[in-house]
Image (tube, rainbow, N blue to C red; front, side):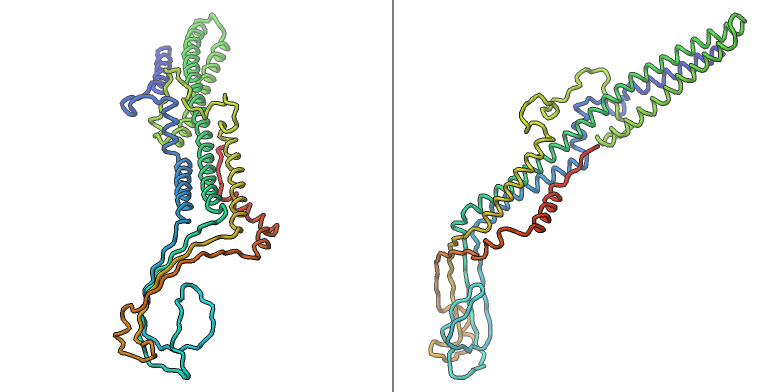
Length: 371
């Protein structure tokens, strides 16, 4: 009986050593806190999503700058149609060169060919700060997305650190429980021998066995808690659970990252506060952009076009082939002042539109915090 209990104690001690000694053949050594944090930041899907949103917002800044480049449109059209016209004015939609012929007393439905090529360019010469406001709004989106990623990273690092020290504490406590089992096995062996010799009462043996069972239960519960914490750490870091072995020998537990310290007095140094500061800047830039979008614009426009037609200048129809090619050429350069006189009416939206806009902006800046 004594030999059996000693063997059981040796088996428990072996299990404890198997939990605490890292299996270097499997994972190449234990992981430090810094390595676990780096693994989580490179693996966790929520952080990868935030990083993609930051890259998307940076691309939006480039798109905002490019949106104010001059536009240059080239059009070429070859057609076969009739040509009947009357004197009078009309409102053009787009670029329509003037038509100054084919005015006659009656309709002529004879087909004629025409060839026209247009090159048109437009540039916002003066937009009273709209370009700057658009770029700053896009940069504010980058700021809020970057702050959102920093906040998520901060929370993940906090969670990794908590799991690390919980595992470390439970490993040390597991060693204490294993030593308690060894101690109660020895006590039970001694009391059992004294009981069998009649020196002590049988109740002492029962109490010793109860304490031994209690120590074993505590050991098993601690082992289960350790496995649960290891599974959580494996989920966050992407390291297989059977390979998650923390470094219990080192004492360098601090992560060399200023975002984990709260020694600075500036609010921007705290990722949880910096996010809301960036959100405030985004709303302010959005307000400025809306105001600038209702200001007038001065446009610089220019164009050139060439035309060909199978109808002669004296209204004589020639062969259809003569209309292929360009016979007349023109150019145009102008300044355009554009302003919607009803902009002051549209500048202040109704209250229900303001509420909808607020909900949309909250949806854009959606975030998830680990509880």
